[in-house]
Image (tube, rainbow over all chains, first blue to last red; front, side):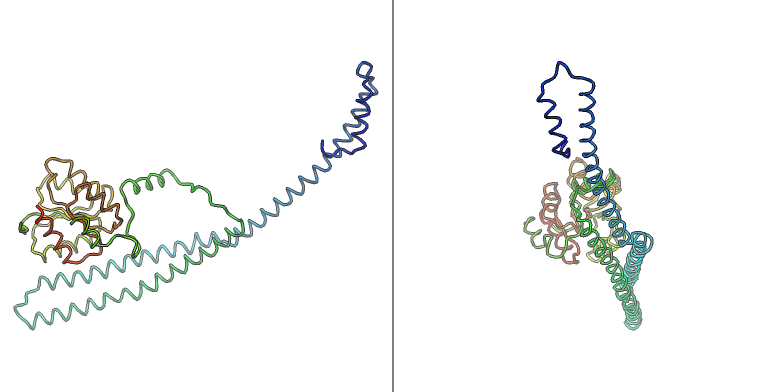
Length: 212
Length: 128
């Protein structure tokens, strides 16, 4: 009972020191109970204030979190920016695929062309070269689309970084679904790392050394 | 040992464009009998129906990867001697070592050029 007053404790001590265990009266018990109640009242009064302060701090923290979460603009990210970035990436894949097919088609037609008639062959080469130049224009558009995706990633990065700072987040174990765990395990078991960044992977010359 | 340009070649890749590139490069090198498959299991089925003189496979495919295909081929007595070249973007040393340990004959890292493909095919048959 840490918050009982010194006076109340002295009353209890004095009673106990009298060692009247054999002839304790109802009045003694009532008196002791009164002192105990007074002590507890003081304790609970102070406890109430302490709990109130804690709850007020928690409420303020929750309010601050709500503001930080609102600042994340989760719905805007989820409903607009991320789907838009997905569409841009889809369009990039489609454009590069189309350009590759166009260029490959030209190359295949030139490979199969009959070069016996030089004039006709040159006309064919000129025509196909034009198609190849046109196909290469995809790079300008995809460059602009990639810039938009990068802008979205930067937007998300800045908001997540601000949120992490505001909540003083600590790294915890990543929560993954069973499907994600299975995929990670498959990649680990089958050595599926994907293309490496420039300078990170082993080069063809080094590979050749391993097979020499 | 000279490369037999009449032998059937199986190209395994889940990316149509890469199959098309390899087909064209192989045609340029003089090969004519070229088949393709989109993953390891489809390749294995084809290999059990037709005897191929060379398999050129990507690593990262689903459901069966090129690495799994290589191990299946090497463990099948009817297929185990088929020359196998891995052509992949997987360029970590552990991948190359694992493939070599599993019995790959050569390893080409993407992106590659026609000369690299030609020299690796020649090296495989020079060794054989």
